[in-house]
Length: 301
View 1 (cartoon, rainbow, N blue to C red):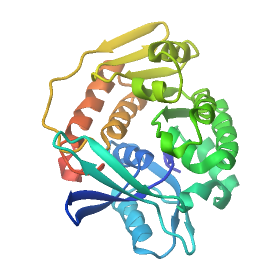
View 2: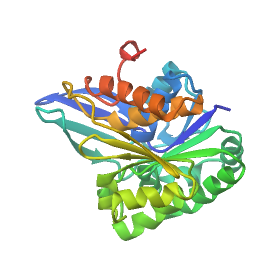
View 3: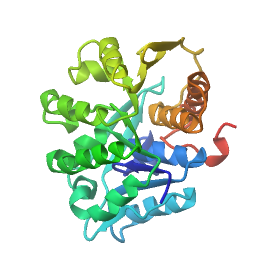
View 4: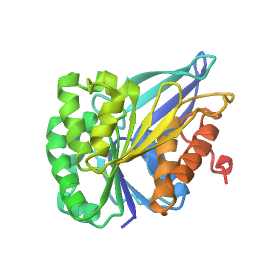
């Protein structure tokens, strides 16, 4: 089994290029991170549910094969198709998303997957990666399965990484999201969190939120709106000033690639400063390309 397991939803990505035209790809927050982790030298399995035999599911599986990713935790659901989203960008590369994912099979992943197989894979992994989008998409029933699996894996010494990637439209309300997010963080070794996310799900002051989890042994990467970064590892805090501005084409996948760069370095035993530098270097390249996943030849050294 792969060293990293990433769980979530991969969708059809339409990157709008003009009236009636778009680039078609495959993407999703945890999928993007999984692709970049694989490219950065960490054999990665992606766990999700797709359709069976439709061109969109075939394209996602083909992308995984092309990247060398492990598809053994993918479930194919007969008669269903993956979710779809479109990205509209403004002149500064900032995004607006449109989603069609209400019947996506990823919502039922934990009812479709062989749970014995999944648990064994998770217990044998080096790292498990999930996000708040994962938690939202799988719903209450899925969270009731996933959270105990994460607890068991963490208890067995497997590291868990969690991104608070919060999308309010996917949740019934912040009062549902916050306890689910905090339950996942409680299993985690690494936490990637933005000040905007903490405000949106009602976590209070972002710095206090980060300090509280750091005090419990979580390595917290706190991202500010002005692009400052702090990494908290109780009792230490390392601060990183914003890098110089660069031309931006599309910010889609910036945070996902940052997480991959950071985690890949930390898993190899690199220090925090080196990990942040690698994460920023990759994200800076990603935002200069349309879509979430850049061509392999564009990957920085």
